[in-house]
Image (cartoon, rainbow, N blue to C red; front, side):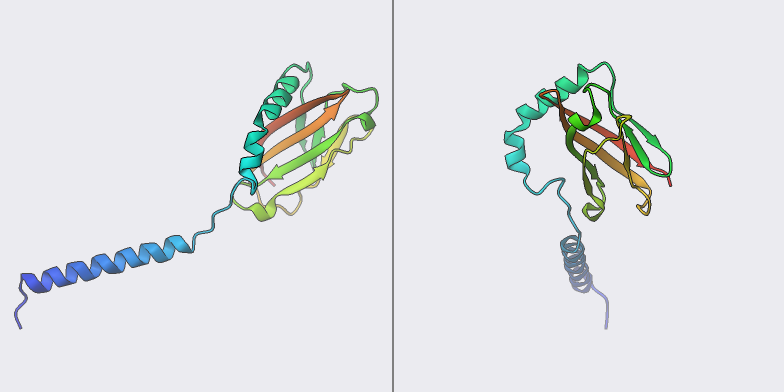
Length: 148
């Protein structure tokens, strides 16, 4: 049997169909994690978020992070006592939503809070703090690279 252009064309079309089916199979098995499940309702309230960010930017002292055996968050002492500061801390792992964590703001007398990061894989995390003190709301967000 001789190899002619009809055989070549058939092989070329068959390989094209196989490659397209392979790409479809690979893309349907890809896991896609959204940043947040309720994206649209949060988008409608984003003006409040902008106000919180501006309030935070007006503070003289900012939140600082210090890595030790745990991650220490140092809050600015803008309230009389640390118990007057409340809110939530959200640790977001962009590559795996199963590693996301949420903590209530619970400061010690020195306006510090320990966040347990032990056992988490090293890599990129986004830390966001939505908090209130003295009848004002604040929002802090920072990218953090865990190096344990």
